[in-house]
Length: 127
Image (cartoon, rainbow, N blue to C red):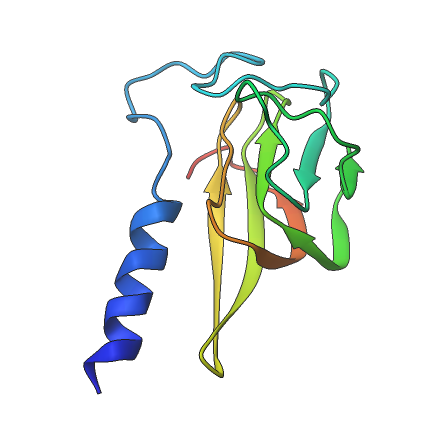
């Protein structure tokens, strides 16, 4: 009975990587480097392939617009100047969990493979 709650807690914990509200977001000023994600784009990678903590493989998604689909995302990077809402799915021992995370400029990482189903821009630019 407690196992689903423990897993949900772990997932929630690893997804919490947003900088403090007082941090002024700047293009590409995140904790993690953008690797091969180009300025002005939002990128998602399907695997951890970062020998030096920098993404090197081809992203499974590169977008500058709203996007809907279903791809595997291990980590992401928001190399834009606006906040993005990322909708995701995660299968934990047969239980499907869903959620939406806010990715501020320079933000990235899921830490576990997830199904990314939507990227939309937060028009109010507030997370």
